[in-house]
Length: 125
Image (cartoon, rainbow, N blue to C red; front, side):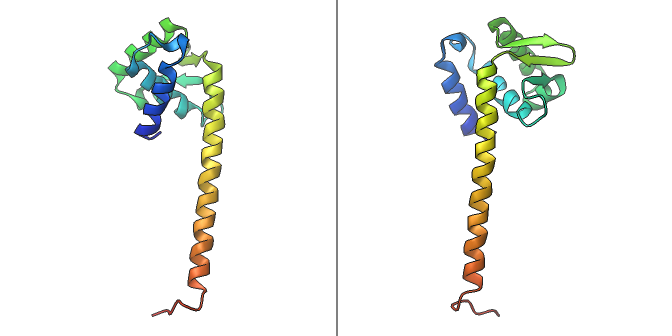
């Protein structure tokens, strides 16, 4: 995820009553970890390796503890289960729409390029 997308997600999560007491850094890790796991076959599972990939290990561990205490995550063998299923569903749906939108924009750009190259105004060198 891009930093501005993460910032928007953290602001949206801060407005929810169940995440109002969670720190911004923990919500940042939550947003990045869920976005990363949403592309896997188990979108509600964050492995320990994925958690270490989204933040430095010390920050990730403290965020995971805080998210477990807040009831958003639960510790299992090899990682964490995200119990915030509504947020996971939103991220999975948004990621699908985002990828689809990107594909449509890329196809439109290629069509415009093809039209320009095959037009009468283009003179090859």
